[in-house]
Image (cartoon, rainbow, N blue to C red):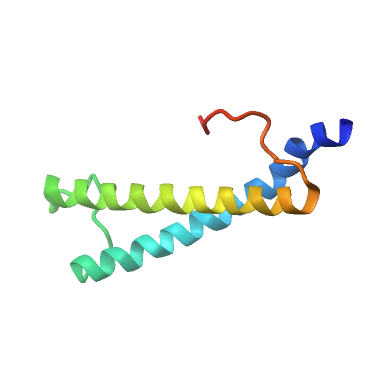
Length: 98
């Protein structure tokens, strides 16, 4: 039983590495998506005076959706891998992320 209580703590470094890799993957996916949509290499920055509200909010919404989807996929995949290898789900509780 003590072994099962240590799994969430042991998963933290793995989760951190997966989160970092997922963030990098999401950033790449967003850049490719923005280039496909707008045919531009760089997405607008919120403080760019030459960009309009619509373009800035569109970029933010797309970026947020991609990051959330990638983060969830990476978190779930990592948790499933730990559960398969140890027989224990790595989360302490069934609550949400935040």
